[in-house]
Length: 151
Image (tube, helix red, strand yellow):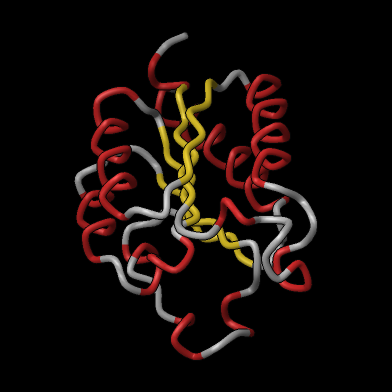
């Protein structure tokens, strides 16, 4: 598959506990469920997917660096790193294709410290509060943006 149709879906800390941690906020779906849904949609959109999760900031930075050479877009749920990571922002600023920031919950209805996102300074769009469906919305938007860049 042509590299420009490759999308990295990156997930930050504690998302490995999706479905087990605070289901009243994050729902009952697991990250494996999210990945399966993303893979099915990606196939229908003609996208290839690399799906990663880490509790380690440096691994997310490394994946963004890897994406620079081969990906047509990134969907990223930085989780708690959203509010703290200049390193992730700097890595994203070195990535030219589109970036969509995803949050399962509506961060603006939560604690004040969650209202600030370093990642939003780079993101081409932000999806928050749509539950795990936000990932699929991000993939649909990335497919559109990738198409428009190749036209």
